[in-house]
Length: 227
Image (cartoon, rainbow, N blue to C red):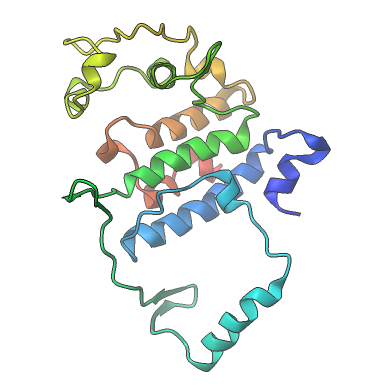
């Protein structure tokens, strides 16, 4: 049984136990640390359906396994627990429509990992952008502001669209009112010190400014994840 199956026992998706979530996140962050520091690659598409998978027919990987045994990939053995494998040349993605380089930072994976951590633990999405009229971009941003606070003014100025929802002084001005709830109120599963530690862990991944998000390696040392 996969975590995806376990989360849906009884027919309805539900949050996983805290310790299971921690275990899944440790494995995820270890993988991201390798991608970011050794391979210099950003995954860019982290979500539950992409990581909670199983292989029902193991024969699909047998050819790869036999090829590796016969002709192993170049690698450097660091110690008994760690090896570094050769990787393909990585070229940052480009926006071909505008012929302007568009580089994805590793921090995009950290943001997605934060949202994924919430999805695994809770029975609801953190940001779903759904109001009484359905999905809207404005309500999606309003949720982010309500839970994470107003983004720094310098960060707002990076986008020409910021004036649509933020005033010159940086305050919210969108015609969509902010949801009257905080991140602390929205999180209902944990209690006491565990809740405080989890939300601190979450905020360290969901910083507005990408460079202010913790690295995967630093997140592995987080007190909530270690407890």
